[in-house]
Image (tube, rainbow, N blue to C red; front, side, top):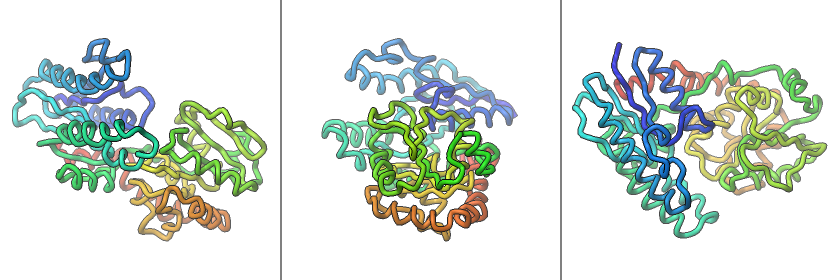
Length: 366
């Protein structure tokens, strides 16, 4: 098999981030079956002012201009051996005229409109308007027009249909199920120097309001008998300090995460908006129950199982999280066994690397 595939995105795929991880796995997978894959991003197609805009207003213009520069680069690279263009999010609305033989695929990972409706209390009215009507209803919508639509979850697929009128197919996201897998709990705790005999709760996320850290801090007060681990990306609030029942772990890397999940009796994911939610899938793949708000991964993996009690319908409801956590603590060993027996096989089916790549290729015919 031969031919070239161009992936259009915003950032380099070797940088941290869920989207970057997905595209890295896509490139690796397509390279492995014989395609020559190139990733076009702001640093290799755009001028300096787009790469590093000097102020907020220039950044707004740069976000729009990036698609134009990406499309112009596609024009330079087109040729008889070009077989597919893969774009995502608000990128890909501009493409040059291409032969009908070139497949055009757009990957939606949620929508800015869906996000804007949830995070409205945390942003200004102008910001919410921009996210909903410009970033989403103009750029995101136009970027997927006339393309094969693939989505990271059924939740995203419904948003795309409701907001944009597009029909897409859910292909989920890739996960290395050999890396994120059950490990010995005691060994995990010893490696991390965590209490061996106490119940441990885990939060993996950031301090952004949408991730629900405020809910986690309330749960820490409600469950003083639990030792809590907060694996936080980015800035750490000044008021957070490690104590006898709290460990703060900054910027935990990929190698550390499976040990963290396996050390815990449960994890929590109280996000206000998760079009998918990698931390949910990672926790469950490790055999660890996750008490989670409704999102793409949590709904798909927990709703129609005996573990549906772990789903919290209102992300802002502290009492609902408390009740679900009490249920896990009452029988954590049995809960872990059910996750491994009932949920992990579904994760492997949907997300194991070879299965995910096969689904992408089947849907897109690449």
